[in-house]
Image (cartoon, rainbow, N blue to C red; front, top):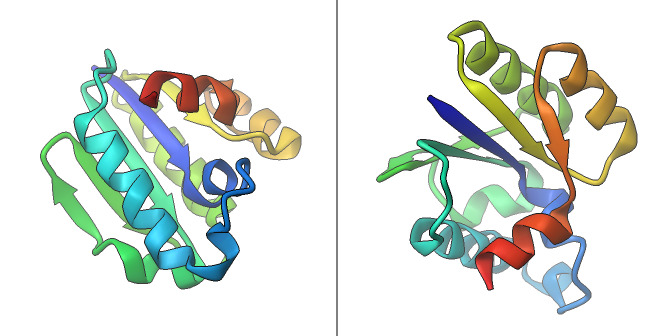
Length: 122
């Protein structure tokens, strides 16, 4: 299995497209793009925090599973990466946060940048 974990706040925040005016709408647009993206991952986990959680309900929608973080998304992202790695999945986390990249590397995940994901979605 291959699992892609997306730091929703970090990916949405990487483009100055007015996301700050409608965080829920930006999260919904990212979710929709992940739903139709042709990626080689068996599961995509979208982690949302704060107001963005209002844009997409928690749960599975096809191959995309949305997780609502309690507080900051970093802890939830690390938990999701650790669980997937412990199952034996190949895990990739999308975030630009260098500290978070190091943390997920410590649980066996590879980190890629939001620009990589956005290229996959276009």
